[in-house]
Length: 303
Image (cartoon, rainbow, N blue to C red; front, side):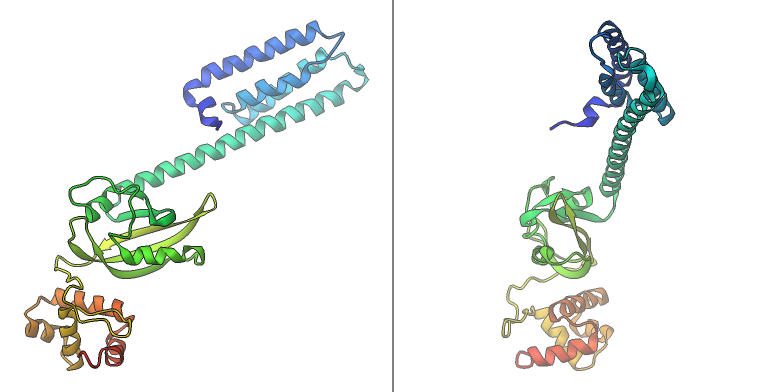
């Protein structure tokens, strides 16, 4: 596929402008030589478009006017319409030249914006990933690699599902949702260590394909996050509670504060808060009272 940047790269500026000027001279000579037979003024379109990638707008206007005058000077047509033909030919050349110049300008601005965005993503302290079809990771910055991987260095081409199952599940709705969202979920590093994550994600379209961009933060506050091994079984398909979560729910039902729960279970206050956030996510509750109500409805027999 043709890439305009390969032809109009800054390194080729001198060569391309020289080739454009030489082409104008060559076309003028051929047009003069074939004047009694045929007009070659249309060929000036190519050197004007070739030079437009490097010239300013006034310079493009000047080159189009020069080529229009040369085309008319060696034209074999009736000179009665000379001024009109010069104007029409100049406008045609000018339009094509400005079109190429604006097209290249837009492409360069787009590439510059992408480069700035890539630099911002790479240097961001937050873990950033983008997901393509089938939840395959297409972009991952250094922070994402450090968060999810331990002994490896590349996340590209791997599925996000082993690391953040909840994000993989949410991305399946990409065909129906275009808005951003936020969630808290459990994640797992490549070595099997679990952690608690806060994820901001949104859907976007690229070349007709829906993709997901996500920012992931580790909010486990250096406290271990228990997995669902030896957890209280799920009830009626509801999310299960591990032993620590079940114990915290029981004490919340007794009316204890976070500090009292911390003292009773011999946990740090941050660990209690982290466990409560996990319970909020599993029960879908937004506050303590909602969590109590949901726990009584779903886990009454277990508690």
